Length: 308
Image 1 (cartoon, one colour):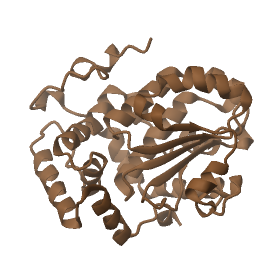
Image 2: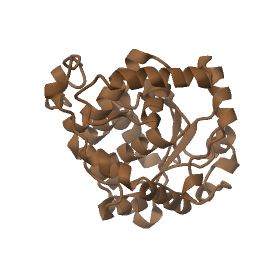
Image 3: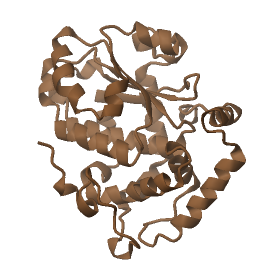
């Protein structure tokens, strides 16, 4: 069952690749080889990147070698800068429980444009805000992005945030710091490859929070792509019932079942996540200092980021 979570049709993938980038399988392999040779010269890297990771940075950066180099470097470097997000294993009791509290799952069937659909919803069984810890949700998000980066054939995401079970108590416990850090990682490591962003089933009592507090904190690219709906009919119109979980009236497996499949994926890749926990960059061996970046701060000193 676990292997069915990330649907993959090789012929459709390369058809979409040619449509999006005018690139072939041979082109992709050539770019991967370029990145592999470059990575071997980066003595500060803690490992030799695997093929899937090299493939990810090429695809998520639209075949730009320079952008792919920066993102691969940040894939490793950010672990030193933000250990609170990267040193938790997805198979700990805390994270297994977190995934039961807050569903955040890739839906098995890809959209027609070969884009992965990520569905997020609070489990009604844990609707009491006492279960909501935003920091755990941030870790959960990064772990999912990491799993997708090294195991999924898709290189973009449709992101659905189902607000049906949310209460004002959840909004009160939301952390703008966690939200901002998550966006930084998404932008600087995972390239913000979100094709669309939907907030559905939004209760009237949360509209003000979404529009005046949450939405302004989003980076411009996400803010432009955000659509807010009080129901969920738009999902069936855009993606079809066959892709949506049974919980909301779709024909796909339930969120509980898909979450179980996700747990199995983490179990399947447990050795890789154990490796990732221990990866640290040796800055003394870096051939060139990190680029001065307005978000990460001078030479990657994350503590200089101002969230006020």
